[in-house]
Image 1 (spheres, rainbow, N blue to C red):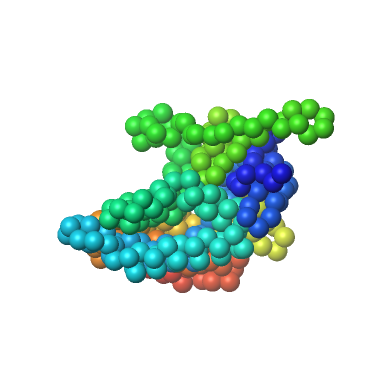
Image 2: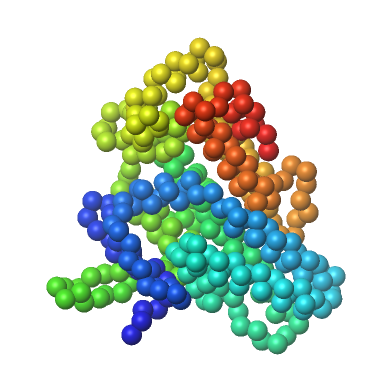
Length: 322
């Protein structure tokens, strides 16, 4: 019998996991991975063109909810068009990113209420659908904020994270021929990454920020480490290139990497206002698509600068331009 759709996660020694995906199209087993690598990878994802479609669905939902605000009946043609757009998005994701596509379909099935035939149903369904679609992008910011606070030594036990330290999950015991194995079953991308984040934090990781490439990493020793071991260019790592680039930037009184980090946090504050469905956007607000389009350009500018393909002035101009 085929497994229920979703992702099945097994915790392994040394901070690793193994996951199996049961989707509508296929069942896939993934290679073992470090939880820290999964968290860092998620923190750096650029949700484009996903964000563009979510913005389209958001505009459709806002138009539907306008009827609710004025006491009118929902435009059922527009509501059906929104449902068709959501289905197209999910189907595309299942092909291009099976993990996120499968979990998005499962969460929609679980949390969007069935049509009860009432006039209020399109309004309730529209709000719930949009909450689900934006949830994974909103949680990415939470993950980045946690990584930032660990790296800077901020306390994670505060009002800022008062709802973060528990996650709903379903555990399953399976016989694999040699013994019983515990797997955790998730039908939501947010729940899955929330679970990984709690596992990550529970290990009290020493998160560092690479002063060369600007990405988070786990140092190999307790000694303060400024640079990671990622390959930067010419087969050399950030640890090898970092001092050279730092000297160049200090001489020019610029730091492309630090400016990218500052601007990213500033840009997110403009982007996160898009969370409020009934709020009219201002000139300072960024849509989900606009934020991730900027992030894509800024990441490429930073990386091209580090690879010696782009002058610092051009990289900074791109990073500082919304």
